Length: 338
Ligand code: ATP
Ligand code: LTN
Image (cartoon, rainbow, N blue to C red; front, side):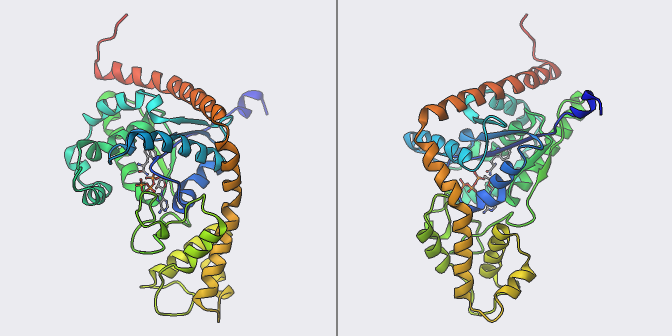
């Protein structure tokens, strides 16, 4: 094989996570575990989206600390700043600049259909700000600014990704080929983990009920306790079924961390009760998360290293998006300075 064919250009990945608390098992299994796994095959760009986080009320000092912590957590989950671009959104102003242009190619009606806006405005009824409404445009800008091919996300973000695709197609039609139309990458197992306390609601890191969430820094005893207390139904047979949201959720989690199929899980727990199953899920999750916890302890002690990685990541990110943004500015007709 000639050297030229060996050096096929890798496809590009972009994804982001909000610094709104410690990452949950849902964030890990639904998204970040895939970010990690894709690093060799793709050119990866991963972002702590602090500008998205202020769509809900944040205490400034807490947001600052949470951003640092989220960055450390991202690296602890295996994102390697030598192989991937790992940075903080506000360190690259090109996202917000592109977002304005894209917002003029986004219809009010499209944004009005977003279910996350409806959920979050119900949850934060005292602060339904315009940013909460236009949030998906900034997310589209995050992705399109890098011409990403693929976006690894949990199932809850599928609608936003569809919107980003529509914006890209519309812009390309109007101004000529500019953006790559991105595809989503949603895991087969664990794309939507539910709260352990209310299995009809998504597990979410900003949830007030900490018992419903497993955080990736929880110690083993805490994890076992949360699973022991997980809400199930009045039955006793471990099997997938209608109206068994709690058990279905636990089976998804067990499957995601052990790689076993639902049939294998049902066979493993045949004749055993929910109690045994819950303990087994807790043990498997605790083992799965232990290396992340250890790595976080090591990394979070070295703030200078984290700051240095952040700086390098931001510079790499800006370098990529600067070119895309100036192309967009030319296309829409913004007068350039010589
Ligand atoms: P918040 O509570 O602040 O809304 P969140 O926990 O919902 O945050 P995000 O930062 O919005 O998390 O999402 C980061 C990534 O994690 C996204 O790709 C999202 O789809 C994924 N994700 C979030 N919650 C879950 C879940 N319960 N199951 C699977 N994936 C999830
Ligand atoms: N909207 C996402 C976070 C997010 C994102 C992105 C994900 C912001 N920008 C770009 C993928 C790609 C969320 O709330 N989970």
